[in-house]
Length: 285
Image 1 (cartoon, rainbow, N blue to C red):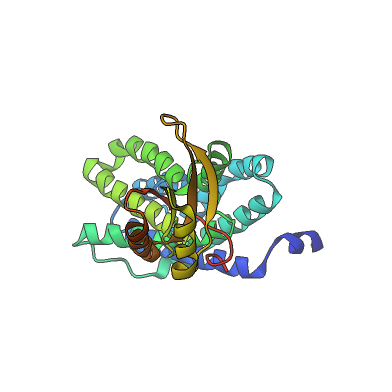
Image 2 (image 1 turned 120 degrees about the vertical axis):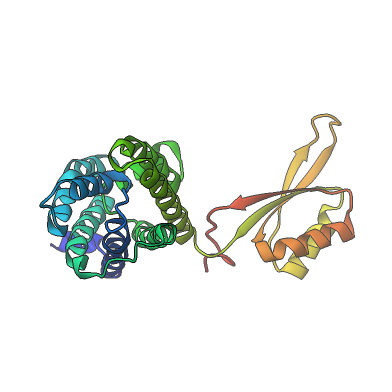
């Protein structure tokens, strides 16, 4: 028990429960009433739930739990103890919440597109909260994490890829129209997951090739209060040695950086990249 408590963070448990609640509400309030499908093992369970009579939310949650047991063994083997423990907790939480939120009023089905969009945002927010603290609801989340570990692909993209395969396979059951709405739902879900995981900051990295590295670096230090890394470089065509400036900054600061460059060196060469995650002083703390 002590070893388990050393791995599990109570704050994380609370966040997993919150995320599971949001996802369960998305399923019971939007997905099931609109007869949409879903991705992953939950999608398979929902298809069985919706197209075989006599099933209820308790049966759905039980079926989803049973389908995930083999993936927990895969998680233990490839992802480690901590992720597997959180995945098991997430699986219990989502299965419980699906059954517990069966009382949630069903959505008005007159606007299918609006319901689809809200379902994606709500489900993505719930899953994003769980994934951000290192947990999962098992199922495709585990496979997405394994792909992220092996190939380095983003978790949201991995979930989208797997879900596309499953949704396309379910077209013969739910019909082409509902499958297309389901794809919108899955897309919004994955984008919301990425947004929750990556946070609200829009961070950029700038690479500047200039003949005035000292002046530009000093201006950035003073006017933007940002650090600058100076890299040694050499032109492949001219053979000339140059210094390249590497800067990490916010999207708002990027416009000011461009003004500084135009003022000091109009012949400078600027390349800007998106930074998906930045850890360090001035960004994460």
